[in-house]
Image (cartoon, rainbow over all chains, first blue to last red; front, top):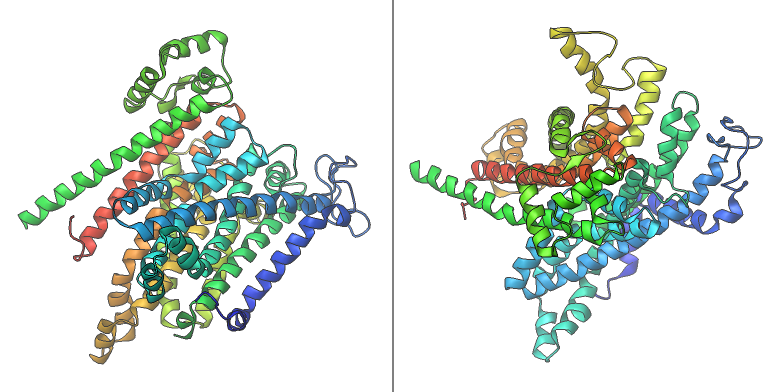
Length: 280
Length: 327
């Protein structure tokens, strides 16, 4: 419900230890992204002796092919990843929510049309479309963010539509309708707040997908060359698998932990919102 | 029976007709990109790796001096005939370049899909029967990792460990280049090369199949017909694997069919890591050489493949599930 009891929710969320761990990791990563310039022991663009293996004395995660400090680059890479991941997911979730809400509430022809479009975008190979768009319009972080945001909404739209279909028959909606509330008020003022827990779950998973998509694109050479991204670090690392394992291992671990954390949070939220499923 | 097969035929026909607008939408989307792009449309149609003469030729071929609606007609007409332009880098029509690589990618994708489906369904059904048991927890953990770890990085780690460290598998390619093998040794050599990339790719698919199977079988186990089956004294094995799994299979097939597009994405990335000479490798080269016609051709062809897979899946459902009427 609208004034959902936060305490009870948190109590149920807390029961899932992995979800708590995921949340902790995400907070740490966001803090790292925000404070990267203070935490980094080296300038991430500064050249030096190349291929130094990890050592506790100077470069704890070693240096890359141009002698740049891998640890500092990973810290800075968190900035881009979080920016792209969170912005793209916000964009995709907003589009998906609006389309799903209108579709679910209005029904009829509008629903048919919107769901047909949603199904189309859902089915097409999104990664290839993203790849084409970024290749044509240039690989800046903004282009990457917009492209991901514009392509990743269908899953959210379907979920939100289903939720609206069931919520719109509820008494409280009937009541507002009887009082003469406008459609917009009912959709966005009454039903949306009640659907918001579900939207948050979906947004969490979308962040994970957006991050995977961004790293995939930059791994193929479509990352912004002016910023540091973990995907591009891996693209470079591929050439030196035999000699410089640390260039491949650490950025990949960073990506995996980040994506895993968002997925764990999503699973945890899901369980906490549907306590019935858990108790079965 | 004949009535049924007649309605099945018209159902298939209708599904095929319904997907035609989508294919046109994909083609028109490409056309719009060509004209919205910051660079000259001729470059988008010919690629950056080209000569001024070839650009001029392309301009004439696609009628780029004519009004926009005529250009659209020409473009759509060409694409529908299978003419996606010419890859100057490969010195071949785009269609030929792509079609030559499709079988190698399909070999990788089908192998991983078969393995992931069998393993995912088995583990999912076993886990659903005894939730929070050791098997369930272990499989769920593997699924979570397969779901979260980027496949291309996993591939790199596997190469470092299994190929470079242990020497069990070849590092890259699809066959050993130094030897001229034929017959059985050739097949075994390909399988040897296939194992690592296919396994890498399958972990992600396995995660999806496992999660979906576990959830749907668990849901089925609460249905009335299962209670009836139990009260009849059927063994738990029969109940899970015969009754529940059969009904749980429909959402599993749906999820897999929706994920085919993403499987192509995974294949592209994993192929890059293993130098597997399929579509993935091709698109990697196309990005480096800015071979736009090749990228666009691939977007259209892969979209069509994905759409066909979805139609086939829909037909499979209507065969499995008698409740689905051919509307």
